[in-house]
Image 1 (cartoon, helix red, strand yellow):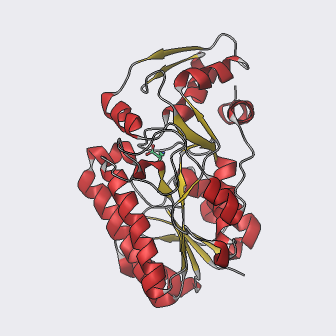
Image 2: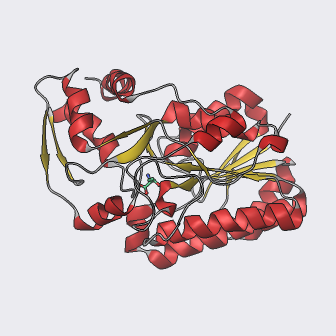
Length: 318
Ligand code: VAH
């Protein structure tokens, strides 16, 4: 049975993935880690091993891997797109030096590595519609630069050292359990909270701005499916385009209005996050993931909206 270390385990993906992995592999086989403990994550920190690991310190990674005899590292710790533009040096340090440290420990200790890339690897010169699996990658954000470099570094460690590296290019991820932090697609999470609390939302992303998105349950499935995929069938390994839907603020608002007819949307566009969003694809081609390891999302916009609003009503006590 795999022995998995999750970095960034208290973040938007990690907080749900850790519990999902514990259900699949057994709580004793999934070690959660974060650079510091956080309030509100007591169930996660108490339902299995929890270690303080700052990924910019390779000794902390190596100590956790050796202590728990880890054979698989799911590396999620990273700064996202918008915060990466506010703190580019910190984004480089965490996203690049952190990944380098993870890959070096994996090489030395014989671990597999899953780490997500992002649609942020694409830029203005990339074809915007049905963005191909293999195409131009000239991002103009520090986050995007670290994700392109990360894809290449993971490929290098596979070809040069035989480290079993795997990853997907995630679109915007939408979830009700843990709020995202510092992303450009975060509007598509906040809109649901405000729809329930205020029956209105002011979007920082402009109308007509289509971006690929995915509901968190599908993202969790993508990670475990790729982790267990037959390696002989993997051609792209570290950078599979995966998507479930593509929408703009008007379209998600229309989906919410089917459940909350009085909901209203208006705009106060944030030029920084708008320019990031404008540089990303309108829609991805994820044929390679479907062909190489059977990727198939379950949620579309309306089924996600129904589930998000249902779960948030319980969480918010509305
Ligand atoms: C962000 N949620 O907005 C992340 C993601 C594709 C977007 O990488 O930065």
